Length: 632
Image (cartoon, rainbow, N blue to C red; front, side, top):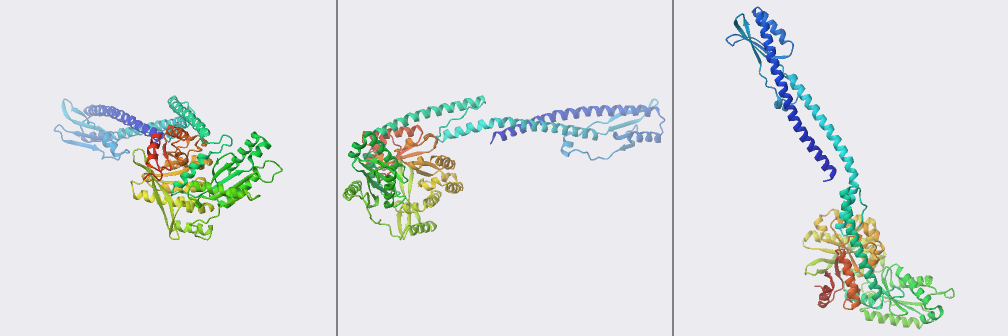
């Protein structure tokens, strides 16, 4: 309940208590006072009339006329004359009148006044007794008017207090809302700072939270600097900033170990021709600048996941299949020829590029051997600059991309979508969740995500697949209260605000107990490229109870600005780093990465775990959970 409502309730309760007490004290005191005055009046008037009648002739007609004239003044409810024996000689009375006051008030405060009684003398003898009762209706109406005035006064005071209190409280609500937002952010592991408000108590609270945020941020900065230093020392080429040979080899190993990869990738090998001659012609320093520029061009190109340097002149490139391997190879060569010319005398950059789709090979060794052989072939046929291994994909049974798109749409509409789950095991043996991997039935054959997403991405259809997968997952979660599922979210879903609204609307229709067992995962590289969108989308998901995590993390975690503000729940470390955990260099990097995540209270999960030996070693290194082929 808001403070404004609480304030009004408090004011109403206080006013009711004050009015109730004042009403009973004032009303009863006034009633008693009026009753005493009416009683005295009854006695005085009866005595006065008795004296007057005692001095008159005892003619009954005259006495009746006098009593009638007195009664007609309207101040009396009853006047009666009794003889010595107590019998009524004459009596004047008014029937009960309608009083302009509520019945409950009349019943509560009705006057009960004894009549005034006086003796009438006839010389030395008693003539009779006069009884007189004054009219009380006027007093009751006056008492009701006093009560109404009192209630109105209290109501005006209450309204004034409420309005004044609301105005004063509204001045406090801004800083108070800021404190609440800050506290909620801390609860969601978002370490932000706030301006200190003027209110003394709130100022102390905000200052304490800011100190906590400052300490956490300082600790994070130190951990990030340490991680960045280790990555530069052990994973990156010192000259170009590209990854080293070990990282790319480990990435390929993890790729082929993953039987249910989300998407087929393309790989390329680039060779700088006559690097020794370029060094002699331009000097080592200028050549190093040119090599770094070339790597930057490759890294910034759309779809390129990573670039590594295998040796002095050879570079290895991994790219998502946003286009065909052939078209991407041609686009990369054109980009290099436009951006990396050595001088005006050359029309092309001194590079050779060969590539293949990873569905054409079966292992890391075969991949590298095939690329080496293709490079030798290109070098032997100048001026040939590039070559692609052409091999028909085994699942390429449809006519073209349009046919694939139509088939995917039909599969979604007819709900021919399912998921294959892989467990994520925690240190204590329990499951954090199960990763749901996409399966789509096309031509009566169940195809994996790696066989589908390349086609869906070409027509910007991946968000529809995401929504379909989430719909299916939510149905499974509603049917099984013990199930917990995680779904990977594509780049199109992250970058399209309309899809955000569609997904949030869907989640809002479900009980929070269902949403709390759903996890949505985003690639680290996507968050780096679209951090502002992620920062706005992730809190909305978490407000509905959905867990949010990053997958394929590690190689660029330091590129995420203000990591503590993301509010994520867990990290899944890329198998390219995990598979090398036995080497001292990789172990140092993983330890630093785990310390950074634990400083944010994040769960850290290793991807690509293969054997039981890996399970023991990775837990000893500090991981909270594991996933991969070795986790049953």
